[in-house]
Structures are given as C-alpha cells and as structure tokens.
Image: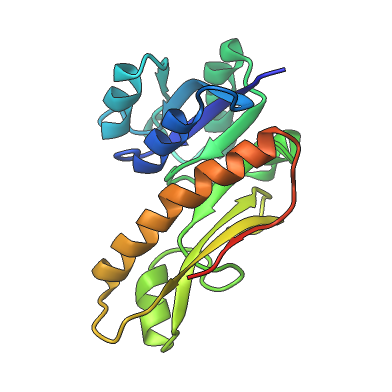
Length: 198
C-alpha cells in the first residue's frame, strides 16, 4: 500500500521539492500535503505547481501556546490522512504531545553528522572545531532536539578555503541526495542505516 507523506516547511522548500519529485513510479510513497507555518514560504507555490495541496498554520496567533499550535497543525493535516511526516526545513520545535503519537513515522533532515552539532549554526561550528568531515543526517524525530534513531548520513569533505556559506551549499546538495533515498527505504519498511561517504 502506498504511504501518504505530509511535508512540513518554513522556507523555500528545496528538500521538499526533491522529496516530491522522487515519489514517482514504483516509489512506495506519495506526497499528500505540504504544510508551512509561514504563509510567504516559497515552497508553498512550488508544491502547488506540482499539484500538491498546501496548508498554512501560522504560529504567531498562538502567542507561544505550542499545544494549541500543534492541535491546529494536526487538524490541518488530518483530512489528508498522512502515514509519514517529513520535516524539511520546518523551523519550529515540536513538543512531545505532537511527536509521540507520530513516533516511528516522522523524519527530519539536519545539516550535521549527528550527534555532532544539534541546533543551529552547524556549518560555522564545524569550521570552528576544525572538522575535516561534515555532512547531513536523516533521523526519526523524538521530542529531544535533533535526536532520534539515525537512518542516513552523507559526508562532505571540508576544504581549506571553506566558509560557512560554501560548506552549507555543498551540504545542501548532499541533503538533496540523502533525504529522498532514506524516505524511499523508510516507506518500504527498511530502517537500515544508509551511509554515503564523501
């Protein structure tokens, strides 16, 4: 049975596009909705152009009430009956109240080789630490920030002249390879680690 995938975004949606475009042919999943907390997110128009329904749930009206915000998200996606949620640049931390019912069915992409560099500024932090290898990770989502079982990692070699921006560009290219590949395996029930060396 084909899995239905909800994709959450906050911005331009480049990973979202790679996920949507990968879900064709004999892929075991299809995108059913794209949700954003930002009505001006560029990814919304891109999803609509591909025929994917979109929903917007702004977080600002909830004035810090995360539970109410998450109830609104659940109400927005419920009619689409998703089996899997893919976070693809969704810049809101979700609480245990939302995550726990989706445990084992929610994925995230993070721009570091977890468990290194949870949170923000991952590329700058890798450079500051003098790392020679950096990369990205796809993991199952748990209530803890950038935690959960790792399903895939892709490495990027750090170059001597790298800046945070140049490193970010190369890591993003690897994200675009890794996330669709992990989703295809995950939707088919394959939880083995996918490792893409530099």
